[in-house]
Length: 156
Ligand code: FES
Ligand code: FES
Image 1 (tube, rainbow, N blue to C red):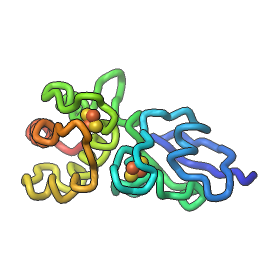
Image 2 (tube, rainbow, N blue to C red):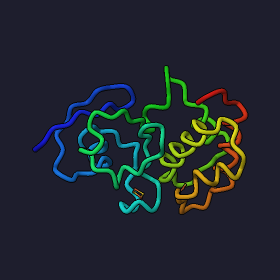
Image 3 (cartoon, rainbow, N blue to C red):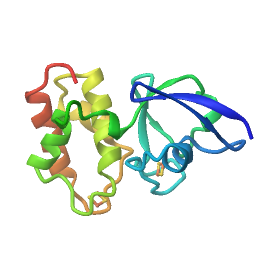
């Protein structure tokens, strides 16, 4: 079985991975980073979103071998020094979830919005969040959370 190195949230991880194994599977099952969720497994829901080169990326469709040596950010990488990231706090403050299953992916996509547009318009938020599905229908609260984080935001 090949082994690869991934740089996840600033830490280097050397891990085995099966040929064709998804990045999502490696994150969850080999590195124990279970904050990134399996939703559809087909690139349609966004639950598995991580950041790769500053861009929101569907880890279910990304072969782990294709990102060997790359720097990745997962939901576990946002909090710092026991303090939640402003986006995480804003999602809590706005109660922008019900079951919470989509939330990691929503926050990672929202993170990519704020990286590109620290003070985004609603159109820009929708453009970046469009592929993330919330089965509980909390979209208005998610929009409010992103606006709230942006208002308090310097650069994420
Ligand atoms: S699990 Fe990857 S997009 Fe749904
Ligand atoms: S909060 Fe349940 S899927 Fe979004």
